[in-house]
Image (tube, rainbow, N blue to C red):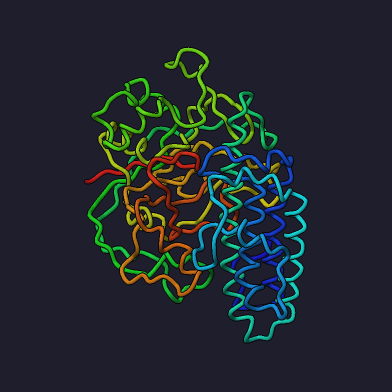
Length: 437
């Protein structure tokens, strides 16, 4: 795969980056039938074909409309069908009803993608050096936007396939790995004034919500050396974790009782719920036994917070997390360029033996923090419709950090701020504990 952060801005590098990302989306969709790509299993998910169309609409709307001479739409209905939430661009088809769109079909979407790809390549190849500046910024944003949707394709199809009682697989499972996460441990972190956020003059891409860079005072704290495991979560369950109101925030308690939560999302029980052997979990490789050494995943913020309370601990703030992650290599179980059938499983793995250092920061599970998703001091949304990308969502959600096994290669960094509502569970989220000293 080409460098995901091309130098500003070379036409060949931009075309290579654009083509790589677009082809990877198609590779992720390739194992799925037309029926698979049309289903919407809940209002938070979107059909695969919608993701393929929407990411194309993004390039169509924000590059071709403004920069292609004599622009003509591929289909005049597509601006309405594939717009997600951009009020400045016009009306849109209701999000909860995307699964009702049996037409256009996946062949129509493929034709739309091919036409838009051809036109974007021609635009970049004919652009002057001055034009490449503004086009390069939009290509960078558009390709990183599409990488976000590549992760959503996997998240959403996992939920779709989980609705089938037989738990069909999206991809063939790799050779099983037998590994340990080792005993739980703490790492002490000294108090300091930490510099948080992306520098304005840093090389490479960053979303606008990753800045401005600013200082934050951190008191001394401890951070868990790895993610919470499924085996540790079973202990929480056995101690009545889902039945004890004293562990839960009020909103989470009432939600969990109303929806009957008694285990993480995708866990299935066929016997004694206190026995590990009775539990299986739906993964993109199908239904498999719960591995007690692997990180627990598909946990809501409310569950993560209840577990932390049960352990006499808390979740880290996003500033503590970033301070610890800064300068550490971005490694993990990101999907390989070989695609979904590659040698790396599309599921979190055990941390391995303890090292005395903090592990698993990147590439297994998005890690809930106790920080609300709010703007950094001095943040201002970009002007125009692009300003709707992040800024207007900075309310009623919580920040997650670190990337997961669904996150594309090169898409994760220490400053990346993901965010979801506290009740959501279908994203690949896990738990890391922190504690005051």
